[in-house]
Image (tube, rainbow, N blue to C red):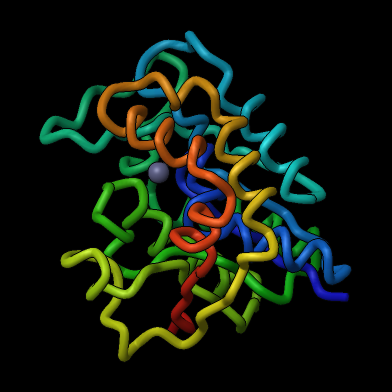
Length: 223
Ligand SMILES: [Zn+2]
C-alpha cells in the first residue's frame, strides 16, 4: 500500500483532472489524501465549498481532506485585495505554503504527490502556484514521485502539456459513475455563471457519454 497525496487549488479541481485516478487508487487499496490550498471562496464566507469537497471526496473513496486555508485568488484580470481573515494563495510565499504541504506529506509518509503542470493547466494563477508549491514541498519532504495532472495541449489548443511530454495516461472509464457523482456534489458550482452551465451539462450527460469524454486522465512526471 502506498499513500498518494493530491494537491489541488480549489474544491472541485480534484474531480475533473484526477477524480478517476483517485477513485481507482483507493479501490486498489492505496491511501488517498486530498489537500486543497484554498477554500475556493473569493470574498466573504457565503457558501461552504469545503463541505462539498468532503462529500465529493467520500464518493471518490478519499480517506482524508486537508485545507491549507488560503483564499481563492480568482481568475479575472484583477487580483483583489486579501479578505480580512485570509491571504490569497497566489500571494502566499512559496516557502511558507510548501512548508504546510510538506508537513502533510511527512505525516502521511506519502510516496506520490499529485500536483499540476507548469502552466497550471489553463493558467489560473492559483493553479500555477500549485505547481510551484507542490514542487518545493516534494523537495522539502523528500517525495521523489511527483505526477503533474494535465491534459494533452492538442486537445484543448492552449495551456496544459504537449502530448509528447505526457508520461501517464490512465483509463478511468470504470470510475465514471463516481466521477460524475463527485462533480455533482459541488452543487454551489453548478449555478455559477458560464462555467456553472458547462458543469450542469456535464453532470447530466448519460454515463456512457460522460465516460467517453471524461474517462481518461493524464499526468506528466514532475522534474
Ligand atoms: Zn481551480
